[in-house]
Length: 105
Image 1 (spheres, rainbow, N blue to C red):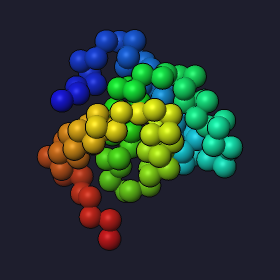
Image 2: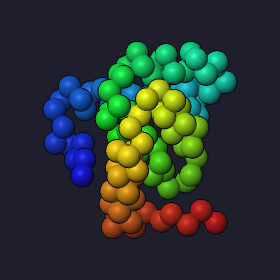
Image 3: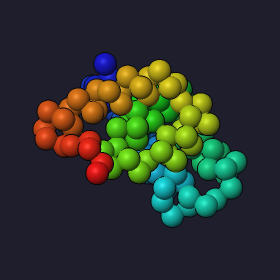
């Protein structure tokens, strides 16, 4: 289990920056940028497969189901997708405990 709040401060800062960059290139204002540029921007933040996987897991757990392109970007940048799947399950479980629903209809 990954408890982001228990990670070292440096890793939490990297995850915060990664969230912004990956979101911007995945589904945000730079979503139409060339794929190579997007991957390079993500890798400029980190090449750590675990941290990329944690962020991919957060995106996979998007209750509105909009973050697929962000997940694919992080995967292309080298995310550990086993870490992503585990973290996504944990995030979904926390969401469901506090009443966030995943039925998208």
